[in-house]
Amino acid sequence: MNNKEKEIEEQEGVPSYIGHRQRLKARFLSDLGRSMPDYEMLELILMYALPRKDVKPLAKDLIKEHGNLASVLTAPADELLNISGVGSNVATLFSLIHACSNKICWEHLKENKTHILSDKNEILEFCRSKIGYAKQENVLVIYLGKKGKYIKHSIEQIGTTSMVMINSQGISRNSLICNAEAVIICHNHPSGNCSPSRADIEMTIQLKSSLDSIGIKLTDHIIISPTQYYSFAEKSYFMQ
Image (cartoon, rainbow, N blue to C red; front, side, top):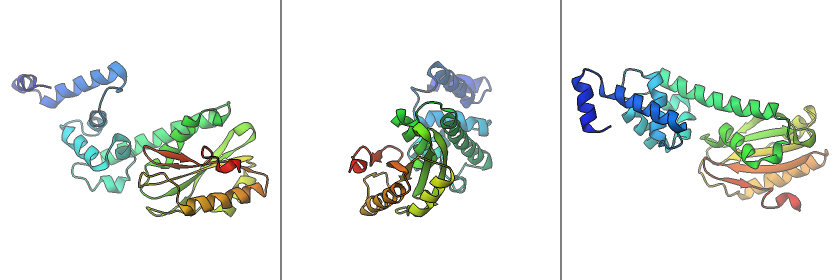
């Protein structure tokens, strides 16, 4: 919006942000937001929680604080509420969008009739949506049946900002309970660096040994962050 357009709207008694919002909506509908920067997408979301306020400054502040749109929408509600301008409506809306995203991924996996491992990007997207933006390290386990058919998933451990333990016995026990034939595990690195630590490697070897002993395959161990990933399977750890 240029200064002339803003001046005309204000002279007509219309708040300048009203026209700006209409233009944002039109741009979004033209390509479903593909050409829009993160802060403008966030503006569109915020205007539904704050319908009578210019939300561009708040959108830019949130992106500056958290880095990108995904990190804003997945931030804990209590953390968001500490930011000036964010009230319960905004925090609830963000949490709702995150929950809906997770549910969409879960439903897609649940109803998928094809081999779940046929698309590695689908697995990465699911893992990232579940734990990729968490502030503490989490262990996500995906249990698979015959031919890789999805059975269920669960977050089985929550650690600190730099460490989480993998419970080999617990994962093995749960695999037997749900009649799994294979398991994918994933944990996140909040630092953004997905290179495995020595502890990550040792715990992966221990888990593989535990699952092997009961005839269950450890298909992969993925380390995920908002922008990167590391796959033990791709590095041939499970080929040895």
